[in-house]
Length: 177
Image (cartoon, rainbow, N blue to C red; front, top):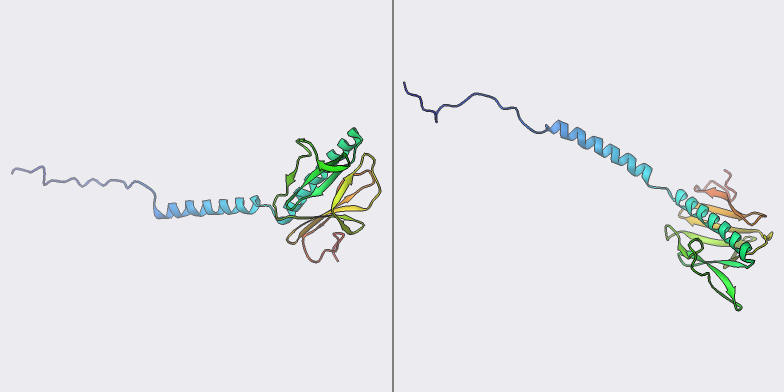
């Protein structure tokens, strides 16, 4: 009996290629968990932002203090709407400090940060950095939403981080009430 090759077929079973639905779901869940961990640990809190800016300004002010001593000239920290700049006196007029990588005008990060200069708990508009340290009670207050940090000027002219509060039950010195 003749057979027709076109009508005959093989009963061989081919293995399916690709991934099953269960394998794909497991991979998606693992990626989602890993992404969630990175996002939670990778986004700094308001307190961390404020603390970072306070430390940065403290270091820049120390450099300005050294520059003031080297030049025997008073420098002035002036706050801008969203940052700060250094000035020096020239012909009885305060002008922007010349191009200097360390003492250049800067913006706050984030720009919504509120900064206030204080002297004996009164708001002042500028802060003088003199060649010789003075014993004025000066502070710089940083606020971002509920986070607040204060830098206090020490007898040697340096500003040091003194107060950190980010919860309403902390008093102005940072101690729990």
